[in-house]
Length: 91
Length: 454
Image (cartoon, rainbow over all chains, first blue to last red; front, side):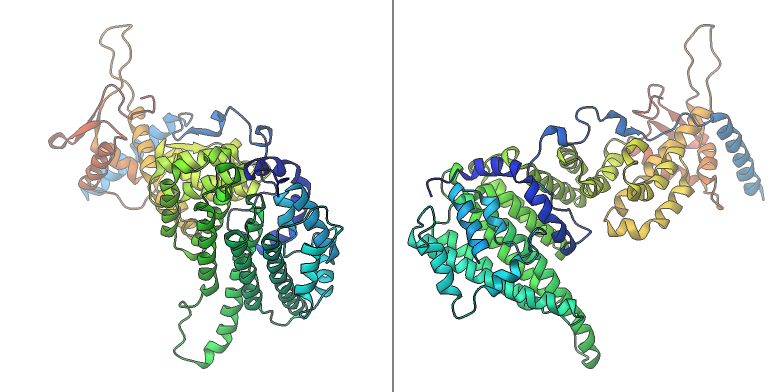
C-alpha cells in the first residue's frame, strides 16, 4: 500500500478528524466498561484549548493551615483544657 | 457484508487506520443499528471464506489490488470477525430474553480474531498504519474476558452449592489472565518491530500498554506493570518520545504510571506524572479528571502539605465527599475530627487505595494544631520600644498536651506527648528541641514550623 501514510502521521492526522465518528461509537462501549477505571477518551487527540484552564493553576491548591481562625477562641479553649488536664492529674 | 467491505476498501485506499479499525468493532454504530446483524446474515459457515476472499481479493470494482499474502491475511481476520459477531449475537439475544449468555464463547471467538490479526502482522505484511485495529481488538478482548469471568463466577455460584471442594479464587479471573497474555503478545509485536520509526508498530505501544495496565490493575497484579515499564525503558533510544503520541495515550499512560508510583509510596514521581496527566487531560473527561485527582490530592498533602481549594473540587461532588471532611479537620488542626473522618470514609479510602496515604496526613493536622498553640502563646515583652516583635519560643509540653487532648475524652501523658513532638521534629515539620528536665519545648526563632510563615 504505497498510498498509506506513515503510522506516525496517521496517528496525528486521522485522530483529529475522526472525532465525530469516534464520539458516536463510544456510548455503547461505555456500557461494557467498568465504572471504576480510567475511561477511554472519546477522541484520540486534542489541542491545548481543550485542556483545563491553561497556565494558572495556583488557585487550585491552598496552604493546609488556617490563620483566619480566631486565635482568641483557641487560646480560651486551650486554657480551659489545660485546667481540665491539671485538675485530672491532681486527682 | 457489502457495507463492511465497502468501508474496508474506502479506508484501505486512503490508509485511514482508525476508520479501518471501526470495521472490526463488535458494536453496531447507532446510525446503523442493524449493521452487524445484517453482516452476519449476509453469508454462512459454508461460504464465508469464499465470499470474503472474493470481496477482498477479486472484486474488480476495488480501486486497488492487494498482494495475495496481505489479502489472504485480511480474509482470515474478517472470517474470524464474522464468527465472533455470530457469537456476540447469540449472547446478546440470550441476555435480552433473560437467558444466560455465553460470553465464554464470545471470548474464545474474539481471541481467535486477535490471533488472526497478530498473524497478519507477523506473516502477511500488514502495514503499521493499520495498528488501530489492534487497539479495537485488544480493547474488546479485555471487555469480553471480564464478561466471561463474571458469567463463570455466577454459574459456579449456583453449582458450588453442590460441591464442597470448590475454590472460588483459583479460576475467578481465568479469561482475564488469558487476555493479559494475549495483550502481552501484542505488546511484544509492537515493541519488537524493526521497521524504521515512520513505519513502525511502535506507534501502537502506549495504547497497548494502557490496556495492559488496566488489566493488571483489575487482576490486582500491579507489580507486573513494572515489567512493562522496564521493557520500554530498555528500548528508550529506539522509541518515539511519549510527547509525540496522541494525547489520549499520553494521559492514560501518565495516570497509570502516577498511580503505580503512588502505590509504591514514591509521592514525588507520582505527583509529577499525575500533574502532567491532569494538565493534558481533555477538559470534558470529568470522570478521568476525578480519578487523577483522587490520587493527586493525597500526593499534594504529603509532598507540599497543600490542600485542594473549593474551586478545584467544585465540579466533583464525589471528591468533595471524599476529601472535604478531612481537609477541614487538617486545616483546623482538629485531631479527633480527623480520626473520625478517616473512620467514616475508611471503606471508600481503602477501596481507592488511598487510606494509608491519607492517614499520614494526620501529621499535617498535628503540625497545624501545634502551630496554633505556638501562635496563641503570643509575643515576648519588647525589650525596647520599636524593636520587632518576637514570638515566645518556649512552650510548655503540657500546653501541647492539652491542645492534643481537646475534643478527645482521654488525656495523654507527657511521655506520649513528647514522643509525638519528637516525631514532628524528626520529620522536619517543627524545629526545636525538647528540654525534658524543664518540661518545655524550645522552638527555633527562625521558623519554628518550616514553610508556614512562623
